[in-house]
Length: 280
Image: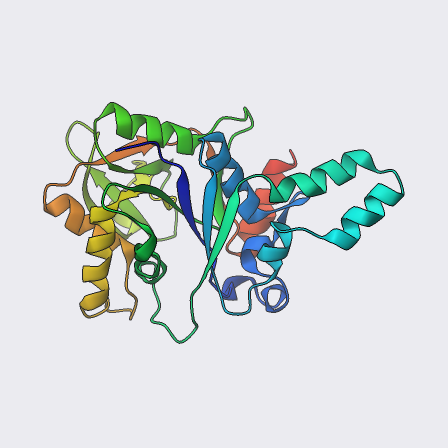
């Protein structure tokens, strides 16, 4: 396997948990401080040496394209009034990486496996691709990169796939739980939803939706899409994870150091802002 230089970031959701603001503002573009939420994911990728970003977007998505594109009128204005520092900041965004967009139609089935199956055309037999959701991120005040840590641990184990986990204290919410092999190094199973009452006070491994996938994982994703959906009607990425592990695939589990922040709900978005701005 060669150097990992490509990421797929999933941003096509409607953001229904944040309505009504997401009627006008794409969920991934909700601001955390003075940056859109998805930019924290992009920055983590850049710190890991990933320079090609493929966004899976909705049919009406244009704000994310605007942010990572050029705004000639603004650039001309900032240059005209002598705001050089601001001009450099604005023009630098489009130069961060090579950005591509794949449109996920609203008529397609629902679930996290859908956009990855849609992007499988871009993944070669020897490729490794970073996969991340665009509405949550791992925040590190020290400027470090958990994605870089994931890539390093996968390479260290001579594997080709992996995922990050964060330690989660039990609460009144149901979460997906990652089960590892006895040595704690590899994925053994994934439980989609677990009743917190069964955990007691014991922390568990939560899935923050940050992965490194090889071509084989995308083949499993296609198998998921070819089978009936889960009982909730979704085609779930986690089913491909379980198939990969069951068939003997070595999927490395790396423990994140950053704080997991989820901006996909109003409460989560407010909390993420408080953390990043030092209010919490």
